[in-house]
Amino acid sequence: MILSGPEIQKRLGGDIIIEPFNEGLINPNSYNLRLHNELIVYKEKTLDMKKPNDFEKITIPEDGMILSPGRLYLGRTLEHTETKNLVPMLEGRSSIGRLGLFVHITAGFGDVGFKGFWTLEISCIQPVRIYPGIEICQIFYHTIEGAIQEYHSNKYQNNTGIQTSMLYKDFEKK
Image 1 (cartoon, helix red, strand yellow):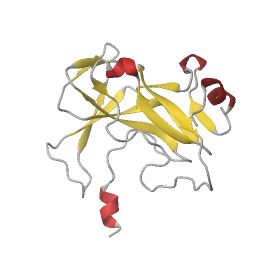
Image 2: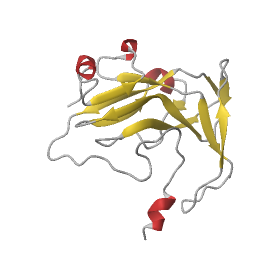
Image 3: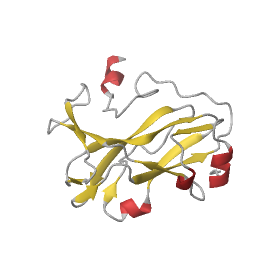
Protein backbone atom coordinates (compact mmCIF):
# COMPACT_ATOMS: atom_id res chain seq x y z
CA MET A 1 0.00 0.00 0.00
CA ILE A 2 1.07 3.59 -0.64
CA LEU A 3 0.99 6.09 2.21
CA SER A 4 -1.39 9.04 1.95
CA GLY A 5 -0.12 12.61 2.30
CA PRO A 6 -1.53 12.91 5.83
CA GLU A 7 0.13 9.59 6.77
CA ILE A 8 3.47 10.84 5.39
CA GLN A 9 3.15 13.92 7.60
CA LYS A 10 2.13 11.78 10.60
CA ARG A 11 5.26 9.62 10.25
CA LEU A 12 7.69 12.55 9.97
CA GLY A 13 10.44 12.32 12.56
CA GLY A 14 9.88 8.55 12.87
CA ASP A 15 9.78 6.31 9.80
CA ILE A 16 10.24 9.32 7.50
CA ILE A 17 12.74 12.15 7.71
CA ILE A 18 12.73 14.92 5.10
CA GLU A 19 15.09 17.86 5.67
CA PRO A 20 14.29 20.61 4.99
CA PHE A 21 10.56 19.89 5.25
CA ASN A 22 7.88 22.19 3.84
CA GLU A 23 4.23 21.35 4.55
CA GLY A 24 3.24 23.03 1.26
CA LEU A 25 4.99 20.25 -0.71
CA ILE A 26 2.73 17.43 0.57
CA ASN A 27 0.44 15.89 -2.07
CA PRO A 28 -2.48 13.46 -1.61
CA ASN A 29 -0.07 10.48 -1.68
CA SER A 30 3.46 11.89 -2.11
CA TYR A 31 5.82 14.73 -1.24
CA ASN A 32 7.46 16.98 -3.86
CA LEU A 33 11.25 17.16 -3.80
CA ARG A 34 13.17 20.09 -5.25
CA LEU A 35 16.20 20.35 -7.52
CA HIS A 36 19.47 21.53 -5.98
CA ASN A 37 21.46 24.15 -7.93
CA GLU A 38 24.30 21.78 -8.79
CA LEU A 39 24.61 19.35 -11.72
CA ILE A 40 27.30 16.95 -12.87
CA VAL A 41 28.06 16.03 -16.49
CA TYR A 42 30.46 13.34 -17.63
CA LYS A 43 33.44 14.55 -19.66
CA GLU A 44 33.86 11.42 -21.78
CA LYS A 45 31.64 10.60 -24.76
CA THR A 46 31.91 6.88 -24.01
CA LEU A 47 31.44 5.81 -20.40
CA ASP A 48 33.17 2.72 -18.98
CA MET A 49 31.32 0.57 -16.42
CA LYS A 50 34.56 -0.81 -15.00
CA LYS A 51 36.10 2.49 -13.93
CA PRO A 52 35.19 5.85 -12.41
CA ASN A 53 34.34 8.27 -15.22
CA ASP A 54 35.65 11.83 -15.17
CA PHE A 55 33.06 14.57 -14.69
CA GLU A 56 32.61 18.29 -14.15
CA LYS A 57 30.29 20.23 -11.88
CA ILE A 58 27.92 22.91 -13.17
CA THR A 59 25.96 25.41 -11.11
CA ILE A 60 22.46 26.25 -12.33
CA PRO A 61 22.12 30.04 -12.21
CA GLU A 62 19.02 31.62 -10.66
CA ASP A 63 17.86 32.72 -14.13
CA GLY A 64 17.98 29.09 -15.30
CA MET A 65 20.01 26.88 -17.58
CA ILE A 66 19.08 25.19 -20.85
CA LEU A 67 19.53 21.41 -20.96
CA SER A 68 20.43 19.84 -24.30
CA PRO A 69 19.00 16.59 -25.69
CA GLY A 70 21.40 13.65 -25.94
CA ARG A 71 23.26 14.59 -22.76
CA LEU A 72 22.99 13.03 -19.31
CA TYR A 73 22.86 15.44 -16.38
CA LEU A 74 23.18 14.17 -12.83
CA GLY A 75 21.44 16.33 -10.28
CA ARG A 76 20.26 15.88 -6.74
CA THR A 77 17.39 16.74 -4.53
CA LEU A 78 17.61 19.74 -2.25
CA GLU A 79 16.11 17.54 0.46
CA HIS A 80 17.96 14.88 2.42
CA THR A 81 15.69 11.93 3.23
CA GLU A 82 15.80 8.94 5.52
CA THR A 83 13.29 6.11 5.47
CA LYS A 84 12.75 3.35 8.03
CA ASN A 85 10.27 0.45 7.74
CA LEU A 86 9.00 1.70 4.34
CA VAL A 87 10.11 1.49 0.70
CA PRO A 88 10.74 4.97 -0.74
CA MET A 89 10.02 5.46 -4.45
CA LEU A 90 10.76 8.43 -6.68
CA GLU A 91 8.82 9.61 -9.73
CA GLY A 92 9.08 12.68 -11.90
CA ARG A 93 6.19 15.10 -11.63
CA SER A 94 3.72 15.01 -14.53
CA SER A 95 4.22 18.74 -15.20
CA ILE A 96 7.95 18.07 -15.64
CA GLY A 97 7.31 15.06 -17.90
CA ARG A 98 5.01 17.14 -20.09
CA LEU A 99 8.02 19.30 -20.92
CA GLY A 100 9.89 16.21 -22.19
CA LEU A 101 12.14 16.11 -19.15
CA PHE A 102 13.06 12.74 -17.64
CA VAL A 103 14.06 12.91 -13.98
CA HIS A 104 15.36 9.40 -13.51
CA ILE A 105 16.29 6.87 -16.13
CA THR A 106 16.11 3.72 -14.01
CA ALA A 107 16.69 4.63 -10.40
CA GLY A 108 13.27 5.43 -8.97
CA PHE A 109 13.25 2.52 -6.54
CA GLY A 110 14.71 3.11 -3.08
CA ASP A 111 15.61 0.68 -0.33
CA VAL A 112 14.36 0.42 3.23
CA GLY A 113 16.84 2.33 5.39
CA PHE A 114 18.20 4.63 2.65
CA LYS A 115 19.68 7.86 4.02
CA GLY A 116 20.86 10.64 1.76
CA PHE A 117 20.11 12.91 -1.14
CA TRP A 118 18.52 11.39 -4.24
CA THR A 119 20.73 11.53 -7.32
CA LEU A 120 18.60 12.34 -10.36
CA GLU A 121 19.49 11.07 -13.85
CA ILE A 122 18.12 13.93 -15.95
CA SER A 123 17.68 14.01 -19.73
CA CYS A 124 15.36 15.79 -22.14
CA ILE A 125 13.64 15.28 -25.49
CA GLN A 126 14.15 18.88 -26.63
CA PRO A 127 15.98 21.85 -25.11
CA VAL A 128 14.37 22.92 -21.83
CA ARG A 129 15.29 25.62 -19.32
CA ILE A 130 15.51 24.41 -15.72
CA TYR A 131 15.79 26.38 -12.49
CA PRO A 132 17.26 25.64 -9.07
CA GLY A 133 14.67 24.89 -6.40
CA ILE A 134 12.00 23.69 -8.87
CA GLU A 135 9.75 20.92 -7.55
CA ILE A 136 11.13 18.33 -9.95
CA CYS A 137 10.03 14.96 -8.57
CA GLN A 138 7.94 13.34 -5.87
CA ILE A 139 8.74 10.73 -3.26
CA PHE A 140 6.13 8.25 -2.15
CA TYR A 141 6.24 5.36 0.29
CA HIS A 142 5.14 1.73 0.13
CA THR A 143 4.61 -0.43 3.16
CA ILE A 144 6.64 -3.66 3.23
CA GLU A 145 5.75 -7.18 4.35
CA GLY A 146 8.05 -9.59 6.15
CA ALA A 147 11.35 -9.25 7.96
CA ILE A 148 13.18 -6.05 7.10
CA GLN A 149 16.84 -5.90 6.23
CA GLU A 150 17.82 -2.23 5.98
CA TYR A 151 19.92 -0.92 3.12
CA HIS A 152 23.66 -0.87 3.76
CA SER A 153 25.93 0.14 0.91
CA ASN A 154 29.52 1.16 0.56
CA LYS A 155 28.46 3.03 -2.56
CA TYR A 156 25.46 5.28 -2.04
CA GLN A 157 24.37 5.27 1.62
CA ASN A 158 24.83 8.52 3.61
CA ASN A 159 25.86 10.48 0.54
CA THR A 160 26.54 14.20 0.79
CA GLY A 161 25.79 15.22 -2.78
CA ILE A 162 25.44 14.05 -6.37
CA GLN A 163 26.92 10.63 -6.96
CA THR A 164 28.23 9.35 -10.26
CA SER A 165 27.91 5.65 -11.03
CA MET A 166 29.93 3.40 -8.77
CA LEU A 167 29.15 0.26 -10.73
CA TYR A 168 32.91 -0.26 -11.08
CA LYS A 169 32.95 -1.35 -7.42
CA ASP A 170 30.87 -4.39 -8.36
CA PHE A 171 33.67 -5.51 -10.70
CA GLU A 172 36.21 -5.14 -7.86
CA LYS A 173 34.34 -7.84 -5.87
CA LYS A 174 34.96 -10.47 -8.54
